[in-house]
Amino acid sequence: MHDDCNEWGTEDTRTELIRKLERLEEERYILREGERLQDFTCLMLRHIGDPEPELREHIYSTFHIWLKRDNKFSCEEMRQLLAVLMDDRHLFYRIGSEGDHSVLTRAFAVLPIALIVQRHRDNSFLTPNEFQHLKHSLLRYYRKEKDLRGYLAVEGWAHAAAHGADALEELIRCPESDNVLRHEVLGAITRMLHNGARIFDEEEDERMASIVDTMISEALLPQQEIADWIHSLSKCTEWPDTRAQRIARVNGKNFVRSLYFRTRVRNDGNNLILNGAMLTAEAKLNRFNEAN
Image (tube, rainbow, N blue to C red):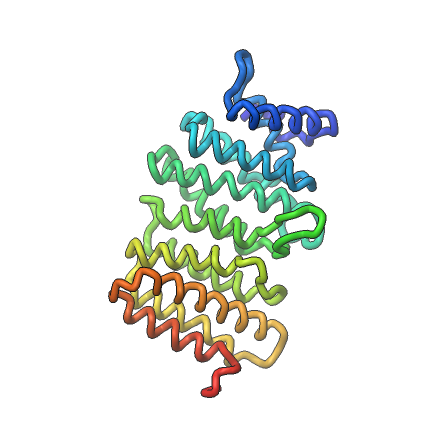
């Protein structure tokens, strides 16, 4: 990416981008003669966190089509794009802040990162050092994101916990991922569920459950290790009776239920250890259970 991709956008570039993306959609995302992918990408990166929800969705849809359907980006272009998406003006833009528009930039930067990781998973192009940087960046982001609002009345989706989970699910499926990394991802899910501030109400638990469901269905971790982690989610019931404890307990309960019914759909008879772990954890986390 050229350096000007990291320049802040203006109202003129915003208006230009809206016009171009609307035309692109009408023309099935095919560039006209003389148009360069680079010019569109720079504009989209500048406005990726725009407060206007339709513009953010347009930008993501374009990245989705060009990265996933049309394979428009070369390996080198994806490598450069990933580096920009993970910088301090995108994935880590004002990281740790809450209640402002900066979450929109962070949450919508992580979505195309997930698409790039999927491309790498299908056809490796990241160097070992680049993969390490990707891994550390995604885990750091999920740890440091504090604005966990789901849907905003005016600005539409923020949904950082869900979008980050999508990227982590792609990460654990990469050939470079090992059991150590997958346990780190489980730890990141625990921290997100035990966030101390928000009970998730926009199905973020389902997006996090998808990560663990993938670990189970693709046998990415031994079942007993996943079962032990599920048991650990109920340890919050031993904490003092505070708001943070309630958040951890309710988020954990909803997560375990999501995962249980997801895995039950397959009903292949191979998840007895996990089924027992989920039922035991749910019983402990559910304070309306008569045993509690």
